[in-house]
Each structure stands twice: as structure tokens, then as C-alpha cells.
Length: 149
View 1: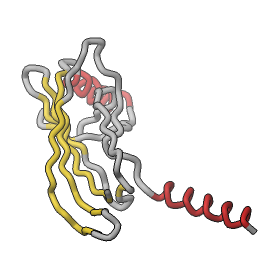
View 2 (view 1 turned 90 degrees about the horizontal axis):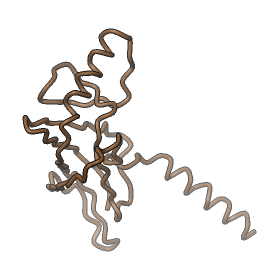
View 3 (view 1 turned 180 degrees about the horizontal axis):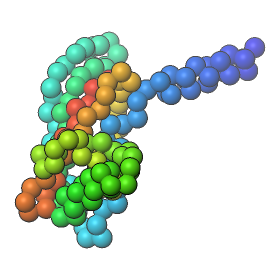
View 4 (view 1 turned 135 degrees about the horizontal axis):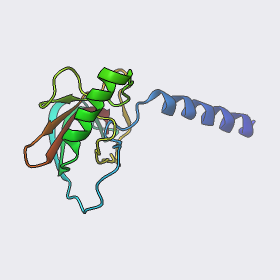
């Protein structure tokens, strides 16, 4: 009886964890071989719900990560050429201030950010990651994060 209960409990937990979205700031790509400082800015956009008894809240944060990577703009431009000439399928869509038409950020380094106290992230919200490229090689990544904490 106890074994059956534990099995059902494990299966129900597996289902819940699969239904939740992975961290929207999981990061991707490879950094340059030089040391890179990454700056983090977090702004509370909306406080949706507060559960005082459970010490939890549901909210939307605007997270900005900035760093220097002079290769980034060139990578995005190369991806655009691949898409236009070789029927390339992009896996990391992004929005940018440099190129129009939904550039592809495959191969661009984006640092990861772990939410240690997150209960889960919304599976119903599309994660839109915006990139802003500065003339000095600076990169700013901005993501809206909707989750429970």
C-alpha cells in the first residue's frame, strides 16, 4: 500500500514538473575566452498574487543582463545570410535593435541566470528575449519572467 502511494506521488510530481516551463534565462552559446563581467538588473513589473500563509507570490519580473561580446552582431548578421540563402532554420529567435525582421540569435552567447527560489514558470506565456547591441560590443538581453516564487 505504501509502495503504491509513493509510486503515485512520484508520477504526479513528474507530470507537474513536465508541465512547467524551463527557466526563461537558461542561457546558451559559448562565451569568448576572455573573462566577461555580466551585470544583472531586475525590476518588478507586476505583482499578481501574494499567499501570505505559504510565503509565496506570483509576479512578472523584467530581467536585464548586460555584458560585452563584440562577436554578437556579426553572428546575428551571419545567421541572417544563412536564413536568406541556405534555407537555414533558426532555433533561437530574438528581437533586436540592429536588424529588422526577427533576427536569429543562434550562436550568440547569452549568460544563464538561475532562480533558486522559483516554484515554477508559466507554461502559457511565450518568452520573448530582446537583444540590444551597442557600438562598443556591449550586449543587453531583456526578458519578461512570469513565475511563482
